[in-house]
Image: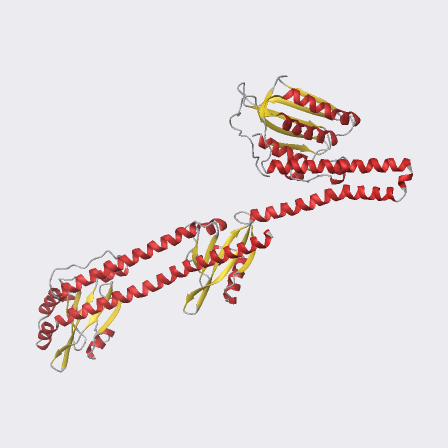
Length: 575
């Protein structure tokens, strides 16, 4: 029942995550697009209206200069005087398109100016309407908003006054929203400056609100344990959170605004992106992706389309790092398979011999006894296996309480060698105890220390050929004020291949499976030793050379060292 429930919860979590990410991404994109267009339109419309009002106020003075042509110096003086209150640029243009006066151009430079008749705002004004255009001025090299009004003398048009907002428009176009227009008069030109300043203040508030919302969204996305990547219709990265950067080894300077294939070189990821766009369905597409760079990992990716407006769609991908989960699943599968195999072997043997006995062999006393002894041998093996499984499970779950205290290492080792000696003598393997000083003390659990030594010495005897030796050596580890004891169990046995050493402490891992079972091993001894050593705060290492022997080294706290650092019950690290 746990599996389906976890699956449902996982699907709900994925949908909620994708919904949140999609909402945040869409909100940010939509807000950015909307504010950009809305604020630009608002700024241009408001500025145009104010510039048109200012141009109307200049109408009568401009008409007087156009009806009776005035010297260029007088026309320029008029333009400079009209532009001074707000910092705008004012230009007076004749009916044929020639510039008669300009607040930004000296009189001597006027002949060099191009004819303005074909400019869009001038054509509109000469046609009787209000002309406007937003472009970069060729004469002053700055972005300007041009507003042109016809100058009439009765029914006929005699020229055009043009009012252009230069400095404020330039600073606005560069994103300097703190810019303010000068206000030096109480007339309509002063009102224009004040209105422009109010508009700029509101624009600054909107930009600040947008930046604050973006900062919140970024903080939420960067705080997620999942990686998030949003890609537009042209395969450009719109958003990439911190976790996604870490997964793919992408630095902070790369990511947003760049093509997905350039930033992440993964054909499977690009294929998923295209499948998501092509499918168009709202149900997440799920894929598992194996990465080899920057580190080997497994990713579960859920992707949904990202609607960007104007008929375009991208994709939002949420990436879960499932490396540890897949490793645990593999370990669990191997563990179940190994346990089943280890149990099946003795059970099959017991069942076979019992069936033989029940089939008539029970009457043959000579064969019956041998069959019963074999069955009994296998029941013992089953018992050892179940005991080892129980021990390992309890150790890993933290259910074993270590009764730590001062222990004489030599005494524990002596009792262990007494237990193992009959097997060693039967195999003609010598046992050597080398403990210095003889009263060497360790801070350990007496019974668990004996269990560690029994497993190691018994293993060494099993895999040592006739005439070989097993030596247990213990010494203080460090200077005179040492805090640890180093123990080495060395044999002159068959050794372990180098390729097998990294996995030798895994559950049920055997180098020679057939011989290990023949010798009665359960495949759990070294796994138990590893966990018990770690639970004592020590370290375990194994060195071996094939056909020469193996040395198992482990450390323990010395008597009086670390007694306060090991609380009871002790929860050992998991494998």
